[in-house]
Length: 208
Length: 326
Image 1 (cartoon, rainbow over the protein chains, first blue to last red):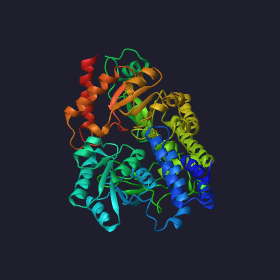
Image 2 (cartoon, rainbow over the protein chains, first blue to last red):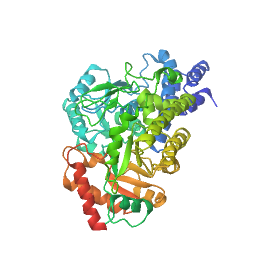
Image 3 (cartoon, rainbow over the protein chains, first blue to last red):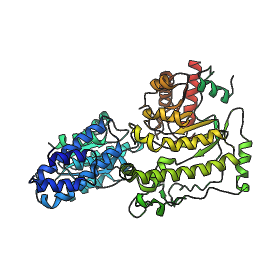
Image 4 (tube, one colour):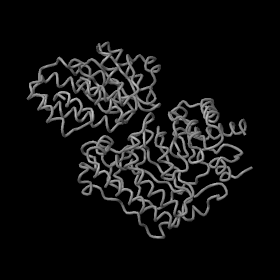
């Protein structure tokens, strides 16, 4: 197994302590930083698919994302200024009146692992704050809005419609337990994902 | 007409109930027990008995532990003993008098004296350290997590000893959410490794000390954990969401465990709720799940609703289905 394949395999099973050393070894063997990064992105795609299919669970996804983040830390100085692998910036937050953050954090990790730069606005985010964040940050291609309660579905609708009404050129993806594809379409979202693994896949499709 | 308790027993044993059990009707929670439990009122923030900051913002349906860098209690799982100190559970006999009197006043033909326990063992791990850190620690520091779970289990057992000494509960209603709507938080194998032994000890102790029924709340998907629920001694899984295939679980496990729920609170319990929507949901649930090993109810973990009138409308909808189906 080549070092780069080893990085890929160890990210997939969340070997957080081994991955940084393996990334360094892959660099020492002459692999390009972008190539190593892409191998880790590919690993996380596999992780996302396995999560969506129920083969793995939240802890496995979390440690895989953590392993990748540790690998990226090794690559970061070498990738500075190289935006070729970036899919742009994703603004993410849980909508106004809703304090749930676990699902949003999982989606954030998976979208970041897919190649986006993440700006996490946290929870209880007013609709206008999403628009401000799009304007404040560079190269925003995607906004991800999460709503976990039936009672905060109106806030999700308001967030999507406020972003759309701003005229800014971004795609909006929504998710959360009560959200259905039909509801996402009804409120004007560009995309919907039922879980964190699918969100990463959908996010990539939406900005392609 | 059977009493509520007789009717429940018929449902649990696959006998001949004469109507549906109506949600929480068989449990009389004795909430006057001396307890170290500190909970915020709406709009308040408190530091609870474990040292966890809990906040209940205005307009929210419940309280949340606060896990930002300034508030998180358990910052390093490998040093959990430095951070985690179980609260006192031993109270003088006088402190139990009100609870004992409340238990005596229960309508014993129709209701069980019930002790309420929350949060559960899994919930406490993530209350202490945040969900992400807790879940990753099962992989990264499994020995420390196992030690912490043992410690929480001993705390639960110490309180259980007090409960069976003074209150002598007939039913334990125990919360511990083990999943999201669509999945369990942990794989079944990991759940078996970390939580089955803990709950076998806790629920086994109660059963050995006079408790007739264990009712466990997890308003989540948890179909894959049902064999472990049975093994640990759960009689009724309350909060069963529609994302579980309830009719199939009844076919597979009926007689070993009963399923209580079948109606998603989020669907019926909201500001714009209607009697028609409540009836539609209970009609579906009762028809799909049938008369045995099933108790229709919303998934909420207490005999209340978030919005006034929904719980009562749910009872009325169940009465209607009893008339139709019995």
